[in-house]
Amino acid sequence: DPIQIIEIRDLIKQLGENHTVILSSHILSEVQAICEKVLIISKGKLVAFDKPENLEKLLLASNGISFTVETAKEDIDKVLGGINQITEWNIKTQEDGLTAVSVKTESENVRDICREIFFAFSDRKEAILEMSSKKANLEDVFIELTEGDNQIFNNESKEGEVDRE
Image 1 (tube, helix red, strand yellow):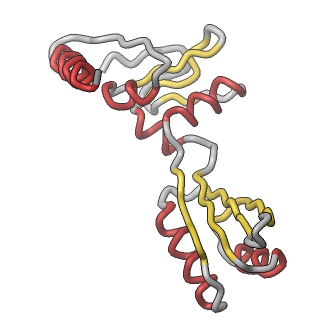
Image 2: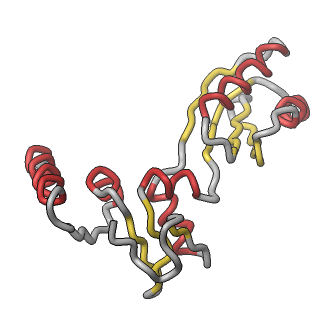
C-alpha cells in the first residue's frame, strides 16, 4: 500500500531524529529512501558502512549507457575509442540491421558522457536512434560487495568498527 509505505517512512525518519533506528531489509530501494547510513554484511562480515550516496560514488562497478545506431562496428570502435572516460563497450548487431551498443564508464557524471557520445556520432553525421543511461545504485553496490571480497567503509571508521555518529 503506497500510503502505508509513506507513513512508515515518515515514522522511521521521525523516530530517527532522537533515536537510533535499525532497519534490516533486502529491499534496497527502501533502505536508500529511509536510511542515513548503510551497513552491508556479507558472510557474517561487515563489508560496507557509509552514506548511501557515498557508497554509490565509491562503487567500483561502472555506470552504463546504451544506445542504438546504424553505424558499422569498425566506425563505432573508432568513435568510442576517442572518448577517454569510457572503460569498455559491447557491440551487437540486431536482426533489424541496427547496432546496439552498451558502454561502461567510471565517470560520476553519466550525462556528460552521453553528451560526448552524442556529439562524437553527430560530428560523423551518424544518428543515434535511441539512448539511455543507468547510474550505479545501492543494489549494484550490494551485488558487487556480496559477490566479491571488496570492502567499503567511510573515512571515519576502521574495518569492523561502527561509527556511532
